[in-house]
Length: 166
Image 1 (cartoon, rainbow, N blue to C red):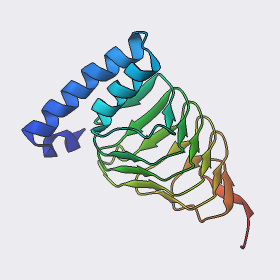
Image 2: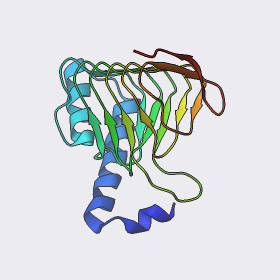
Image 3: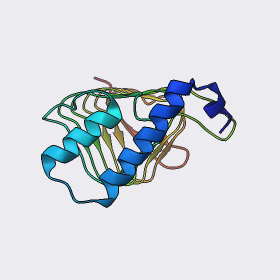
C-alpha cells in the first residue's frame, strides 16, 4: 500500500473518517434515508434517488467514486477507488464484485464503466479497465483489459464469448 504515502494529510483524514462511517453503515440498522445520507457523506455528494447501493458496501477512500443515476449495486461490493471509479447510468453490479484501482505491483489506474453494463456476482475488475456500453461481465470473470461495447466476457482472464457488431 505504498500509494497511501502519496495522499495528502487531508485525504488521509478523509479516508479515516470514511472508514468510521463505513463501519457504522455496515454494522448498524438504518432507515433508507439514513443509509443514503451516510453513503452521501462517504462519497462526498448526494447519491441519485434512482441509484441504490445495498449493504454491506466497502471502499478504501470513497471520494473518488462517481455513480450516475439508475445504478444498482448489490451487497458485498468492494471499490478500491484511490485511482478513481466512474459508473455511468443504468449499470447493474452483482453481489461480491470487486472494482480494484490498485494492484500488488502498486499500479494505480482508473476504472470506467459505461452505460447499461451488467456485472455478474464475484467478478473482479482490475486497474485501468474500461467497460463499454451494454457489455456483460459474467459472474466470476476477472477483467484485466478493456471490454468493448455490446460484448459478453467470461473467465479468468476474461475473454469475449459473444460479440454484437452493432
